[in-house]
Image (tube, rainbow, N blue to C red; front, top):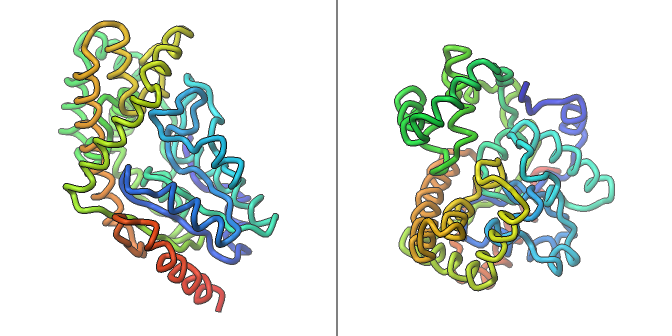
Length: 327
């Protein structure tokens, strides 16, 4: 059963001070750069709240921090899973809570960074327990996937659970099947289970900072980011993953761009097509991220363009907010 709450989390929520810092926003807005800058000023350690940087070997396309950055500032929940292992909001909340407790014990400031809104909600507010899977329904859905294809099942999810369908990335086979499984097994859409909040708001106190860009600038930033990833060797990385015998249906391949480049490596589409589809999918994902985070309470937003000169202003806000929380 997927669940964000645990005894450690409950004890930790009562004694934790100062609050943690959460940095949120759409992909390509500079969250990691801001986290590195603030970590140096605050004496912080970074907890990864990205759903895909946890996978070993999936480095360039998930924009993992470089070895040099990880040497400068400790990072947690990076490279902790193999590509076949599943990850969930509840599992993230459990691991992140443990990491945060350790950071606080060392007298450091936990800085949680990522664009996975559900994961952050699971950590900060708690999410309702989600029923365990049903193997028979899962097998049926897998059989339907082989015959009907993902688009048909995604369309079914959009009709039955439009809220969940709207937040999933294109091609996210694992989560489409999981959402359909929950709905079929329980008679209640996954979004309804997630909406239940038995643990209350701000179960772990946090100062939340968001980065935002005008849509046109965000789309330009995404296009430039994809181009840089390709220049850095993304195609060679995917080639190596396939050479290891990894199946593109594995959970780790849900990271946008990996399946597109896998098709290119196998000669099923051109590099230009793979890049174009990756950019389009990332733009759609960023739009969903913006929609999610704008609905989250208590996020203070800062413009992400020309980020470095804005860091002192963000730092001032964080320090002032920490002071209020501990008053």
